[in-house]
Length: 366
Image (tube, rainbow, N blue to C red):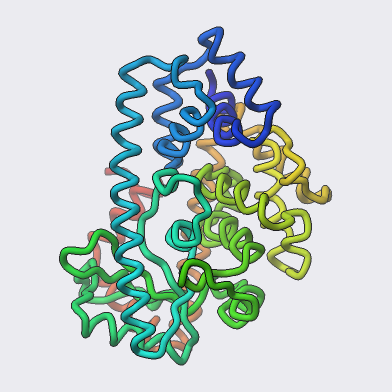
């Protein structure tokens, strides 16, 4: 199996209990043993969907086609993830109660929000890193103070922090399972006017005693987290964890019109949706409105899937471009913003960091 075949096999496995044509295709491949399980394990792990893959294969009663030792390993990892996620849910409950007691209502985001609202049949399906929640600009500094007063400290005790536009540096309390990210914004500054707290607060919903975004906004953020904040639009790749969330949310809201109210965000988000449509074998729930820009994006996306050297070359070029662009932006902001000037001054004197980054990007050799 090449990279494309492996990626699409995993993607279709994630939908076998919803899309009958995919279930038939996957079962046929399993019956003739046309699966490289080493590649499947590596890629599904890299995309943080290994437990979700197992849960879907188990529900479809396909585990008999897998090697016994692999099934045992998948079961073990899935159990560990279920246990971790239950700990995250418990921690989120404590945070929710703490903040409500201080007259502040958090809106939980991304993986934690999905767990709390019950998006997954089995909480083991989703691999979650941090607990993310967002607040109004008025409540944002209050929340930082409340959590610090209650034992939360910076995960990385750095001498200086980048002046983040979106969220406070990650905090964690001793004995807790996850770090927390306190957000005041959802997006990088370029797009913040289109998707922000003021917009999502208009139709926030309460489920199981927690505030979460509307399904339409959750679907948008699932794409934004990869496509915009992690620059996926430049790399033209697909993150299966985000894609699977988009698929599940498309069962609850209409993906086709989810981005119609956006301007600058509309094309990048629809490009990711189109990639999902391709990877999941064209399900109706992920249908998109074709444009020239989207088809050009898909052409590059498919070319990279089929050519590993092209994929590596394009990824390196995108990384260099983004590095130069980000540094130019910091230089510009440092002219007007004291915090950026302070951060830049510290970084300039940190020669080890600069050299490591230049080597990583290929501008220098070790």
